[in-house]
Length: 181
Image (cartoon, rainbow, N blue to C red; front, side):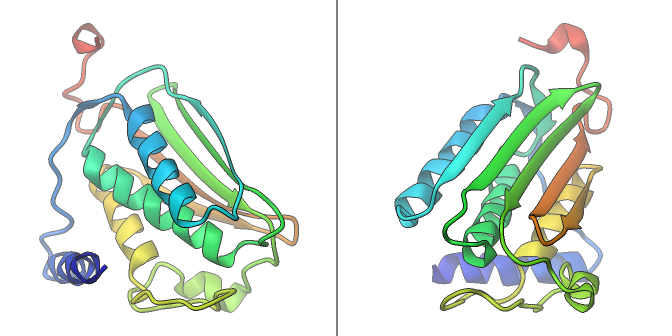
């Protein structure tokens, strides 16, 4: 846990110094990456139900470790802040030149004041339990999305809160259809 916190602070420093989040991109089958993150969080939170629907039939030009980090941050937040009696729903698709990953949880809407600050470093919302983070998870997730040429959007209502990552499948354009497996 300490190593993860130190790495988060280092990511913050790199982002703030203008270097941005470092990436090691490769043509990646992302479903196994996503499955691994879900398995880790299910093991850490066996009382929570996570429903997945992955339809990623094309490879994604990305840094798989950074995508796992981004997804772990979003899924961890959904578990911490979502209604404990409702499942966390995760969907991923790779269509029309875009990779999309969404994480949704039931519970109260995120207040407008908090929405403006969610992706800022060291901002922590009110968790439904002991929160031990530094308030860097969503900031780092947004920086990882930006480094991949994508973005994270938030949709929050009284019905559910959903974070959606959208990024190009081909990243910087170096993935061509003939190079797909």
